[in-house]
Image 1: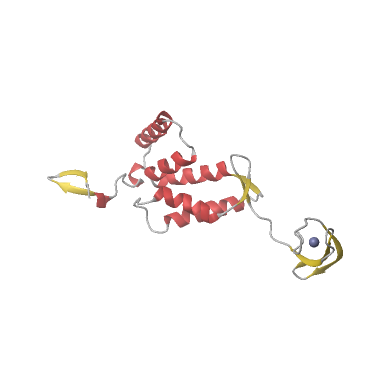
Image 2: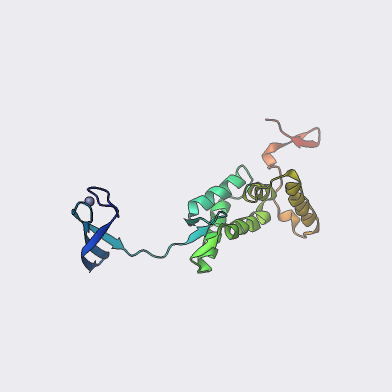
Length: 179
Ligand SMILES: [Zn+2]
């Protein structure tokens, strides 16, 4: 740590003792000779996320929640689904017991869950996360979803693509509301 008096980065330790919260060190600045005290606390090992550009960042559940929330915005999901999804992903990551986890692994975990919950949320998340560079890649993803849906025996469990409140009966014909 920098000297609090002159901001010089180097100091020597003149005294060190273990205290209940960690280690207390008496330091002397190598530039101005001022003495100051530092405390080093022992913290539980954090969980780090390795980003695409290889930077490490401490795992932040709020960030995970924000990403999922954005994808699920205005989707007709049952209350608590988003929080539960984030909780599940968080505990799965911690259960793996690794100190570092690639952001792509977390992204895949989110996609896997959103795919089962809601296609629109899934496509939204995928388009940001996978950064579909062209419309062809996005179309391929959607095509594979549609084809998968036709084969899936439990497609009725998927939520409707358009929320019920956005639909109105007009002359016996359903159409998208413009309000
Ligand atoms: Zn100093």
